Figure (cartoon, rainbow, N blue to C red):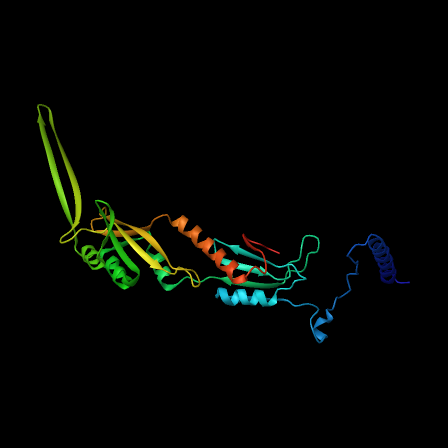
Amino acid sequence: MEKEAIKHLQDDAVIDAINQVLIENDADLLALPESARLEDLEQYSDRRRRFRGTFATNDPKSFANYCVNNVSEQIKSGCFIDPDQMSAITILDLGTVNVPLHADHKAGLSLQKTAAFKALLQIEGKRMDQKSAAEWLEDWSPHLAATIRGENGPELYPLSKAIAAVRLVTLKTNTEQEHEDRDYGATRSTMASVEAKSRDQPLPNFLEFTCNPYHGLQERTFRLRIALITSDGDPEFRFRMVQAEQEQEEMADDFADLIRQEMGGVMDVTIGRMTA
């Protein structure tokens, strides 16, 4: 016999011995020769062995409807919410720890920010010159209200006056010089201060921005602190969201409550990420 034929016989004997041991130990494994090729015959069948697929949407109602219509009482499912990404995934064939399934039938939801909320995030915490700040206030005035500190707490301040105050801010520079003569020398110092104010009316202290932050979530009001910056010579404004992290947590809770409500209790809804 040729050397190559002898080698094939030896390989076959080794593979048979390995497979015998695997069968005796109930292992879900099979030893194959390197020349073997596996062919999946599912594509030639009239139907798949099981359903596989991923449904994706931005609409919470469509997401919930798909999950509810495809959930099975015999198969364990689970919905998981990612609060950082404001997204959710449902695994409809998750199974259990004792009876795990393939987890390849999924539905995904990714909430979309509204135009108003995007506009808020684009300027939040960033410097703007007078023109940009005033134009932003005018563009989004239907969502805005202004407040000013009063004797008994915050008081509403007409938004039209707030916009005019932003446009009419002027800077006043005060310079003081101090000169001292001594017998053996002299000292001179210059101190400058910059004061910013509006000509006709005071600037508001806070803005209240009301909008639906994400499609499907309830309307909420974000409070913005107004800061006037004069360090670079020209007046600039910065609108900073008060308790931004707290707002994010509350929106995530609203998201979870919305999904639980839409699901109607047909499956567990958990806050967290799941990879299967």
